[in-house]
Length: 247
Ligand code: SF4
Image 1: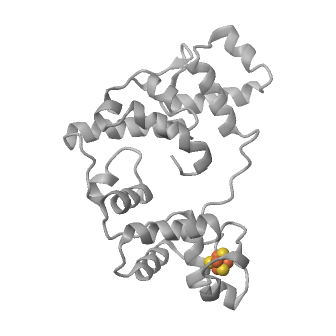
Image 2 (image 1 turned 120 degrees about the horizontal axis):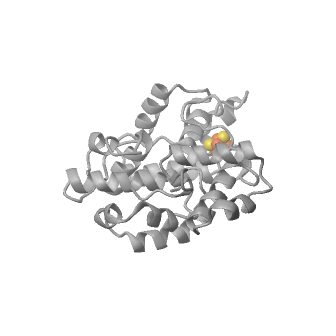
Image 3 (image 1 turned 30 degrees about the vertical axis):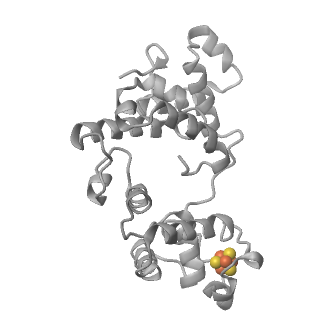
């Protein structure tokens, strides 16, 4: 939920979502349209679909308990390298480094002072962690990147500024070209992501036909069609009737 969505936006909807679906079994049994309604405010809706699919696999193949192994976590729908290692480390204490965009910036700047390939970043992350407990270490690295070593780094107040390799050596910022570091996102206001959310919200409310057309009269037809096609491709709507998918 926090990937490319801020903590402030996620905090309250996340609490409500977990109250509604406290276990994988509860989520697996819920209809998709209901899950999408409860997901509002939690970022990309296809993640809700993936999470529900993952809950179904957890129930059918793991007796309703989230698997602890990296390989089994990676096999769940919608779970990539970052999510699998984050769950294994934070939930189960597995000795793994977590490599997200925040950690990628810290590694490239504070430790390497150079752009890193994915292999180099992973090796450096593991070497830096050493034998420390993985969850607090990974959390500290993520927080360092999120609070200080941001896209525009706040070096003057950074707690590791005296040990930072890039600060000592100078030169161009190595972070943007480094593995795992996302490109800056376009502003949310006016974006396709925002319009997708608006379209899905109207569908959740049951708006269709002429009322749907009227609600989006200000949007260029080709753009609206593209947004609807994207929602259909993600399995979130059925275009024939312009309603939420239940399957
Ligand atoms: S001193 Fe600056 S560049 Fe170095 S880790 Fe801190 S914020 Fe990042």
